[in-house]
Amino acid sequence: MKTRRITACFVAILFVFAMLFSHAFMIAEAHHDCSGKDCEICHVIAMAASVVRSIGLAIGAMTAFVAFAIITGTAAKKAARAVSFATPVALKVKLSN
Image 1 (cartoon, one colour):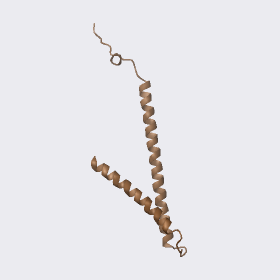
Image 2 (spheres, rainbow, N blue to C red):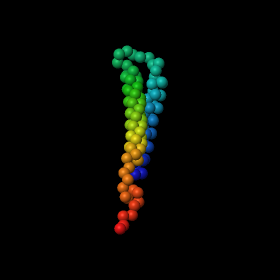
Image 3 (cartoon, rainbow, N blue to C red):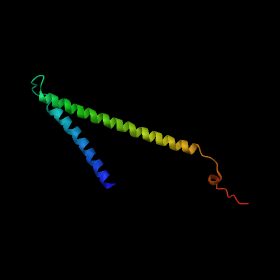
Image 4 (cartoon, rainbow, N blue to C red):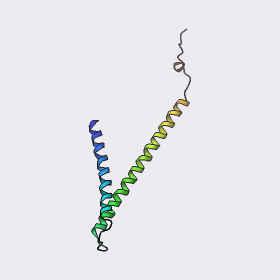
């Protein structure tokens, strides 16, 4: 259990560093001297933008999934409370003759 938590924290830190360094590279090289069609810096900037876009989409999808799970979990709990049957056990009736 503890190793999962450490691994999850490590992956989260890697995502933050990937976003941070991708943005930093794009900002630092935004006004470079482009050599034309096969400019390596332009290709790396495009890859960094792709990383930022992918991580942003993943975060959005995870947020939507968590929101959906919370909403459906809450709705299921409310439905379970609304559909309760009156049984002798639920009413705490002692059946003795």
